[in-house]
Image 1 (cartoon, rainbow, N blue to C red):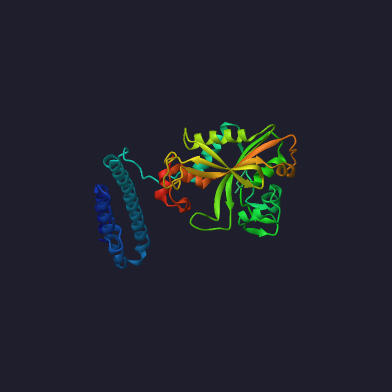
Image 2: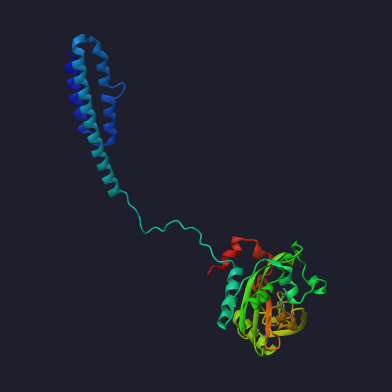
Length: 341
Ligand code: DAH
């Protein structure tokens, strides 16, 4: 009796497994025959009815049938899976022409753009880049630049002291000394980078950027300085813009001059950016003071030179017509996004 029942389960289960055309049907058939409450389990419960001596043999047979059925199920399952996957690949439409998700593309900061443009322009007339440390010794930042300890010119630059002998450099001019000490003339370098001063208000930041220029050669005059800067201004701000030199004082240059360029926004007519003057100051310049040459191991009788130092933030706001210098440090993407290359 029991044997027939099992044979019948085997036959019907095999039929249903093989007849199931999709995984849901196959799963249902598995639950029906092989599940915990399935027909197979029900029959097993009746094992007790069988005489003791026949049980081992019967058990063996039942087991074999179960293993056979499980194999049939497994084979069928993998066939159905494969079939369903093939169907899915055929019917699911993948539109390869749809644009992919975009990660917002970054760009260089306007200060970096301005710096590299300045470096490129001056590079075309032979200047190459030198860099110096941001923590600078008193000697390089002041002393060798002809600014002795008790000189009133130290008041021009409110300094962050790291210790007695070291400061956060207040300008890029120390790179002049470092270069003259380690290289022989002719020298033609620019030194861009951050500088630090202890002042902070609407028009002054404790941390800003400068670019220093230095040329050392024989028979260098103010005319060379003027020519170079006039060329630079026209390349950087626009052809036709005039350059103006105003007498000034810096301890490390003699003579010294402040450099103004005609306002690129109003072309000299007067506007808000240039405070109606038509001119904008971009930095200082002059002929390298003999004391500075000497302090750096260069003979002032044989060599002369000119130097200049410009504010990079100033140049950026002039070039792009930005009305507030602070926005350059705010990292507002709406602002920065306008400078993508
Ligand atoms: N180092 C000066 C400053 O930060 C700027 C400067 C003026 C640099 C004249 C120069 C120069 O090289 O010749 O105020």
